[in-house]
Amino acid sequence: NSNIGIGDHALFSISSGASNLGIGQDALLATDTSSNLLAFGNEAMSGNINGTGSMAIGSGALKTATAPSDSTAIGNDALGNATTAVNVLAIGTTAGRDASGANDCVFLGTGAGVFAAGNSLAERELPSRN
Image (cartoon, rainbow, N blue to C red):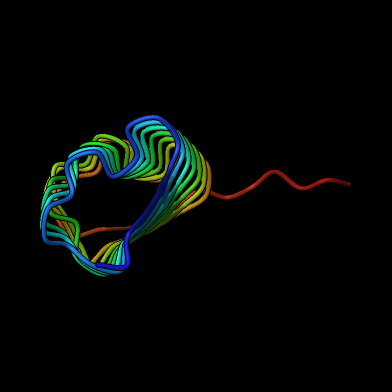
């Protein structure tokens, strides 16, 4: 099935999914029938069951979404508690962390859209370094 799991319980529940890579403790833990997923970090995408075409990089990134589709979360806890994630981009620690019903969204920057709901575009301005 071309699945690779490295770390305690990585890809633990896989049955018929294909082309998945999980690196880190509990990465892709609940993944069963999913395909084309990439998860790096402890508990990255650990709640996923049947999502497709998504990537999570960072501890707890996309942790609880059960069927993320075509989404990318980069940063510790990015989209960490999102219940759904379809066509979502979250970059930054906790970006979109508690987003519920996140579809067609972009969250850029640390803490951007932490409590967002529904379709959103959120960004957080970074302080200047003069």
